[in-house]
Amino acid sequence: MAAPQTSASATSRRPASGEVDTRPWWLKLWHTFVAFFRVSHPPVFSPEVDIQLLLAHERRMKLHHARTTEAVFLQVLLEDQRFVAILTRRNTDVESLREDLKELVAGMSTVRDPPSDVRYDDVLPLILREAWVVAVHEGKREAGLAHVAQAFATRPESQAGGVMVARGYGQATRPRGRAPQAPRFDVVLHNDDVTTMDFVIRLLMEECGFSHVTAASLTLGVHSRGRAAVRSFPTEAEARELWERVQRSIAREGFPLVVTVEQWPRSEVH
Image 1 (tube, one colour):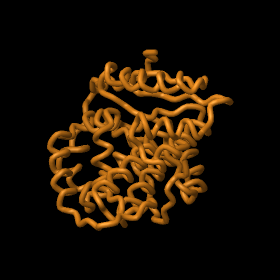
Image 2 (cartoon, rainbow, N blue to C red):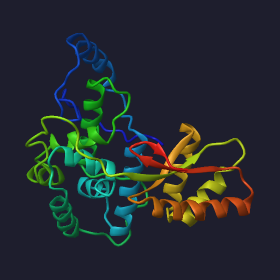
Image 3 (tube, rainbow, N blue to C red):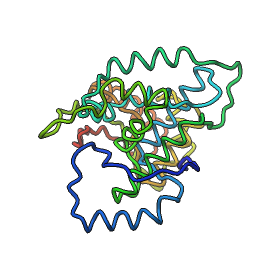
Image 4 (cartoon, helix red, strand yellow):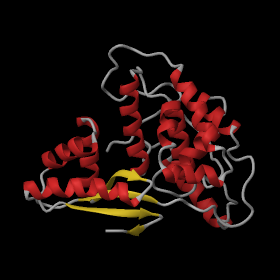
């Protein structure tokens, strides 16, 4: 999937995890040197962030918004347990944040025929660029969910960033250890040399309810990366229900497509 391109500039930020930066001085210096050359490149995001951007586009279409806003993107992110765990570790009142965003999104203007191509408001590209800058200065090759959370917090003047900071993000950190992380169960598709892309696209549309645009993008992700999580659920039972439906469809067509259910934090279930 192509990474969104933005033009805003940004400066180095603290580690996205919110923890104390324990890198030795020479490693920080090296990362800063590398970042000087890489920060101007088009942003590269992790598969998790790419999927959330696609889902935000889908949400925007259903809401009849002209563009994908930072508020809708953050609203979609809060449906991912991994992102919720990141905010929880930074003492964020997630439930109140959800309510704030629901109110914020409900008050946004709508259009009769929303454009089907990917469009962002003025603020979202700045947040995505900021996430990329944070990742680059940490020596990462792609911006992940933690970097996106950090990027929202560095723009409290934005609507979504403002409510996230107001709900406690980053105001206090846990002195030791990590917060317990609720398990998440991903349905993962694996690439092979036989299964056709047309079939995978149709499978994702019929069994997951994706639009053709999202299904095609996810299929390209499976093809280029070798695997991709297409749906995430809070319980194994829900993930297995989708897994069983997908397996039946695959069996009817006779393709060797491999689908697994994997627990996050990482532990393969089936």
